[in-house]
Image 1 (tube, rainbow, N blue to C red):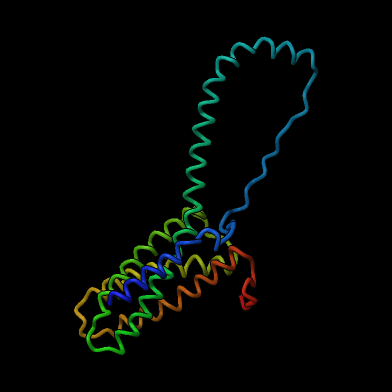
Image 2: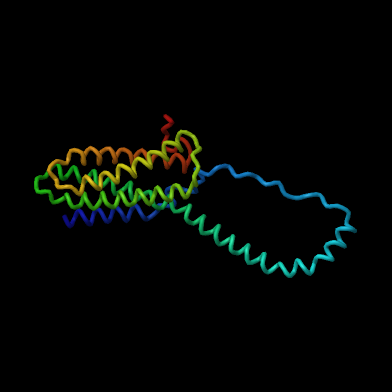
Length: 216
């Protein structure tokens, strides 16, 4: 049991080592930004010069306020951008933990002592919590936007299904273990879903056919 716990922690550490690099520079899920037209032709220089000279004092008085509001907007924009970029860093936890939970359940099926059942429980709890966090940052990344191609739609709604099934699994794994049939079905289904979800995330981050699979 101690050896398995160390192995599980080691796998989790490997997942954390390069989460941002694994997804690359993700730009998916962003609605096309509207391009603002700027710049106007100036009028006659004589009248404009007189007007600018008359308004110089009022512009200088308001300059301090404009600089302060601009700094606040920049800080807010930087914080939002930081939160949006956390999605790639959080998706690796539910993928790894749910997949390890399904793998550990195979050991439970082959042994009668049940010494691995607590490990399955901890992995499911961690995977469910990680799925909720990853989904929240996923919606932060895109905003309330429901557009996108087939890959984006699948990635979005499979992610939400993983959250819901993960919550159901927490209830199943916490019950008295008279029968683990429903739990095992859910775990093995979840293992397939997180693998598919990881592939879809790679398609969005690195481009279509990044693994040479072009069935979508």
